[in-house]
Image (cartoon, rainbow, N blue to C red; front, side, top):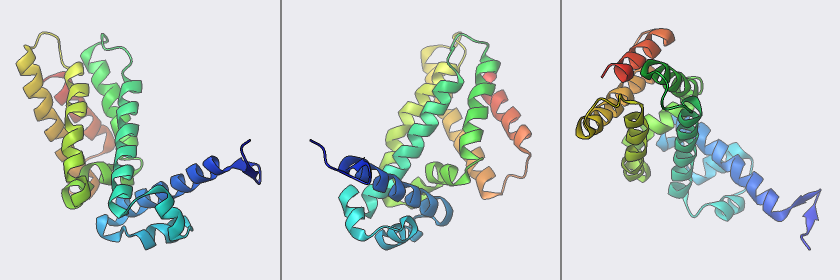
Length: 194
């Protein structure tokens, strides 16, 4: 029999504490960067003791990677949900994908910073960012026109991943001063007319 306390099981309470720690990690990593993420800072933000931190994570680096992977999975799922029909018109697919990307990355800039900026400055994420590159390249490659040769599709997808990452990094940093609709239309053009 599973023991409960205040109507919740031990596993439910552990999961809830882990979620609080991940939310605190996202907030710190996504606003102040890796330098602001320490076990104490995360616990303080989550209003939990260090004991509960170590219940879920081995160390600070494991938390940082978990935050990054959570955001990457949210983005991957948002892109898949946005473009369920890969046979649709390329411009329609591109607009749906870019709009979903912008919604996740710009509406909550913390997520954009975690996914795009943190791998550059956070040693725990440098290899993780490289490891996720093929998955995002594949998502873009699937949106490219079928008329392209396989090697051309691969090279174009890789180039577009880099171009889009740089555009969004500049937009999040405030160095690209364009409106949201203008950013979306430019990215759609890149994807729909490679």
